[in-house]
Image 1: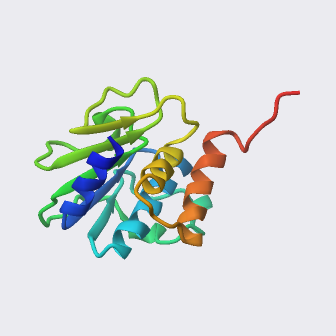
Image 2: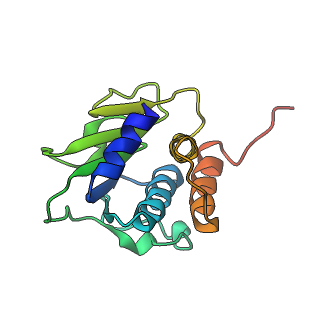
Length: 162
């Protein structure tokens, strides 16, 4: 599935990244990491979140201000939903584009055209990391930061059992 998803990404010119309503570090870290990688690949990338504002605790994340709560008007070739258990969590209506669904929730209803849902992974950012790693993408410090934020937030800052 990773290779098939990557082929769709490479084929697309305009990509929309979608994060879930009431965003947390995992959904934001996922879309922001992908934004950086896809932008560097020369893609036209936009990020959508239905919430009117992003939590201020994530203001330090690179490109956080690129996230808009309005659906882009230009044609979208491909959308990638990150950490969204179902299509209704995106706040999006009808879709007329290919959709990749990246998630780690066992309750995910596989709403994408391509679904990479890994319930054995602790965060969606780890699914994104796997997608990038399996396609030989070298992570910049900014990409690694975004992935790290999602990972530590979704794991509760790595608590250890005693």
